[in-house]
Image (tube, rainbow, N blue to C red; front, side, top):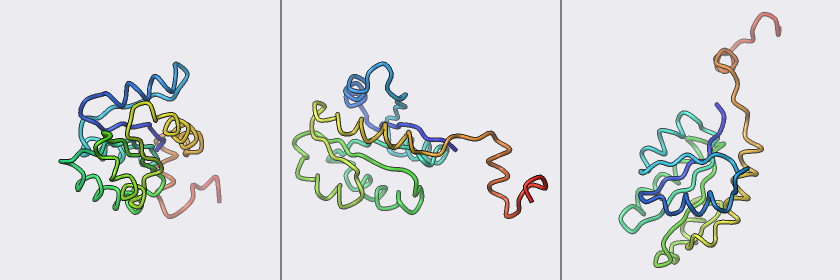
Length: 144
């Protein structure tokens, strides 16, 4: 299981700002270039923290994904970043479940703080057998 800090954006601009703010000891950041790739990563790491860029062409798809996030990945959280020209979308993004909204790379400090807290509280990745046993409806013999 485990959790990752995933950034979904086409350019890498936000990832640079997030890495700069997080510093060398910050959590590792995993970049994807599309929402579909980020969703695939969430399927592998369902307790992750996702930072997704809202674009004028992809706003509908992002809001649809945000609407499904809570039911599909209840332990995941999302923050939304966007160009300043799209800052009017902030309250809609928050209503859809965004933990934070930033319209400038200079406004990422709260996102880094939320990501750190989320990753610290996320369930740790267990080994394969432990995860498999957790999926079964009965307990191993040594735990009964």
